[in-house]
Image (cartoon, rainbow, N blue to C red; front, side, top):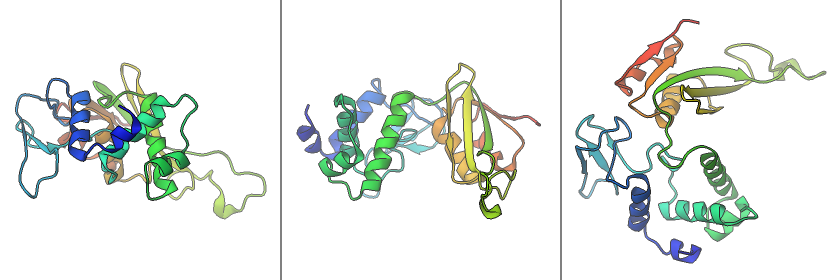
Length: 227
């Protein structure tokens, strides 16, 4: 299938293609990993490709836990972007993605390319961390440069620092994920963990209040350690 054929694919076909890749034996709940009580949700108000798990009662689509999760771009354009980046030996620029896929802005194309390349360095669509996973946060940044104004110095520790907030997740088998987050709060940190770690895992964190309630999304356990 070439790029022109991909772009002519409708959303239903694109979603079916992704489901076949991620779930070759049928839908699997990304929240609890069960596959025996999954049923599609239909109706005029239901989103396309929406499923509900009879085990944990949570709803999901094939994009949950992937780089396409919460994206407003059509799945057709995501698949076409994957095709372009994976098939071109010389690489594809964000400007070319914007032009060939008729994206609204260069920034959209840049973020799409960045997400896809990050995913290619880790695992395929189903590559969530699993097992025992340790989660920790830190502020990342160097010492202030000579002559740098005090208002821009980044060597202050804790809240109020100008350093970058970073979150890291490490599973016992050795795989890891890390990256910047907008801020250290309950919504941001828990969302990052839920989108990166399989629901059947056991989570280990410190006693920071922003991790409170993670056990609701990880029924096998959320354990805390005092630093």
